[in-house]
Length: 249
Image (tube, rainbow, N blue to C red):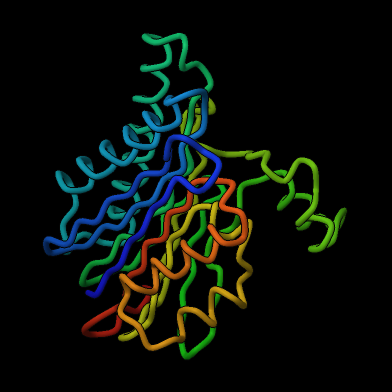
């Protein structure tokens, strides 16, 4: 695999509450998270979620598991992270209400799975075409899906930052877990909304199609968001698929 990652606090925020992880020992796991909450608490939530999910997946996952078992382990990992965050808020009342989005790619010999909660995103670039494969868990996205607002109205909606699902929001966690078909030289992009609120999909695609290594591409996307104002933390994690194709089963 060829990977590139770049994260930045942006021009407004003092603390970067985003977090990420890359694990490439046999089966591969790539994670990004965007923390929410008061001063430093969002940073705690994102770091905690990334650590808990990483540890759980590394402990229980193997490439010989069927798709049902694989999804079950990922679902349990999300639930453990959610529980850990809620437990922490009971110990530290100042962090009440903290939470985090989290989007991951799990890639092994048999399966390629996206796990997702919140409004960070997963994209796949295949044959020069960029497709958003995750769905935002946000109020504005729900209004768009129901036809109540247009894409243009969504971009300027006063409640565009309201998230409907995240780790730490409640005891019950509803996570999207779905297979994706990945082929050699496809690019998977995981990113927080600090990028997508300022850089549209066409611009992201155009950047990814330039002939640069993944670390440079990640830096270019983050820099573009900063040039547009950089009013939020920005994290970009790129994975270029190497080797045999992975087909959904």
